Image 1 (cartoon, rainbow, N blue to C red):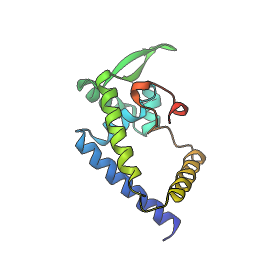
Image 2 (image 1 turned 180 degrees about the vertical axis):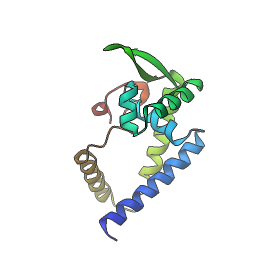
Image 3 (image 1 turned 30 degrees about the vertical axis):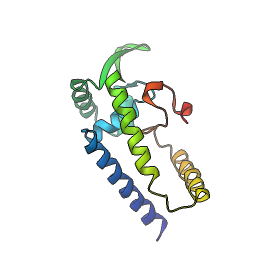
Image 4 (image 1 turned 120 degrees about the vertical axis):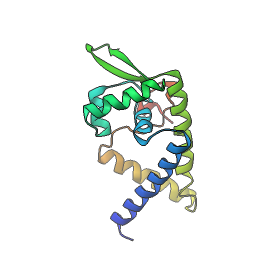
Length: 154
């Protein structure tokens, strides 16, 4: 199997696990992505749109729907009083942590047929691909309840 095929098939496999977890937690994929993006810290609306690859109007609707479920709240941006940031509520942080833990566990089970050394190599190589391609921090290793930065995760 070639590199492109292997990576695309892996992406489909991870997407299927993610989609199954989304259903289990009664979320939509965009809602889950929003919660996972703001786990480490609040994001501004423009920054969210850019990170999630959505139009500003789509972000507004997504945030509205999550606000109605008491998962997120808008707060003023201390750097710009005219702008709003989106942060997790206590309920949203708990749900984000539970969802994150579930997805992380499920995805970590996918390569169990590999040896421990092979899994460590896979983690290192995929980490380099993520860094080299400047993938935004859409799924951190930092629990929402800790409010730490990406580098503060385990």
